[in-house]
Length: 112
Image (cartoon, rainbow, N blue to C red; front, side, top):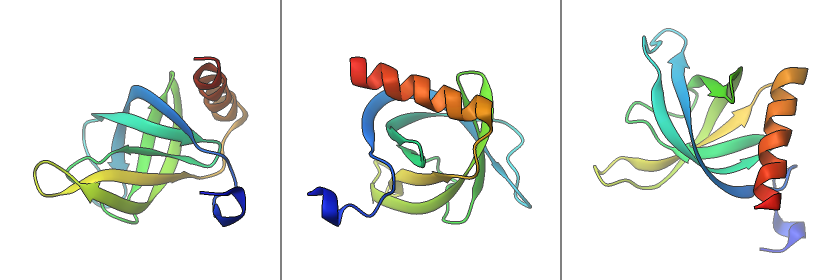
């Protein structure tokens, strides 16, 4: 895909690590679930989709000990159980601490 056809504001980087997240809101999850991160940018991430993931879910994400929030903006792929394989998560406004945590992970993925 060329740069002109890319609709995202931030370049995505392939990564492979696990995070903990949980759904917030009226159907809030009481416990966190570990998911795999497939790609990451300053604007969001693609994760392995929890079985409860749905477009519009607000997630609380623990990223290197820093809590941040994201919105599920899309679902894609076919999972093993017939559900979706991936959830596409857009970050809300990042705190300075969360921005720094994302930058560190991006720097590590570029150096790898």
